[in-house]
Image (cartoon, rainbow, N blue to C red; front, side, top):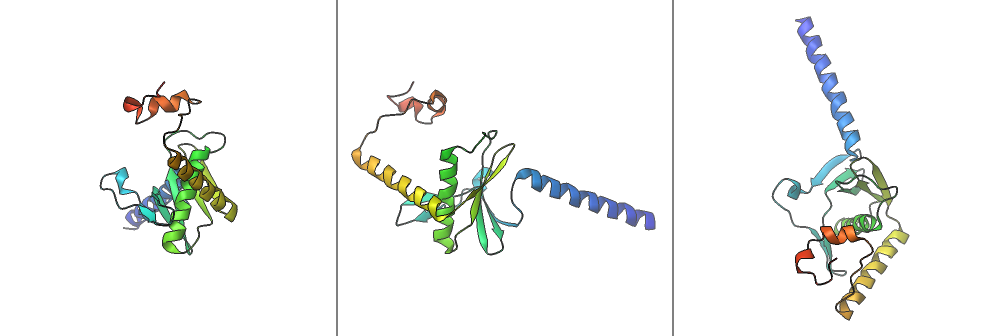
Length: 169
């Protein structure tokens, strides 16, 4: 009987260690996951929406740490040396939306690439940069049709509008 109890105890310790290691490798920060994007495996939930900025979106995960909700965005690609600006702004948008919805500013958000994790601070300066970018986008929308950027041909090739775009490469 004692041998069986020791085997069960050893198995429990091993499984606990393995789950901690998998969580660490996933890049999701410590804390209780209170939201994960169900679109990753089926039914989509309603995204966050801010009436004032008309910004909408939903992170892949929200992790509760102390009194904060930390947005986590998972990217399937390998990490660049530094996160792409578009990925950083996407994460900042989620931080902004979480702040607007909860009334509590997250101190940072997480960008999880396949092989590396970045913590991106959500400061007043970062929030200001996001709001400036949103204003630039709104100003461009008021102008009408914009010239397409062809500086990154790979983005054009992977674009979802490629079949109907008259500017495609």
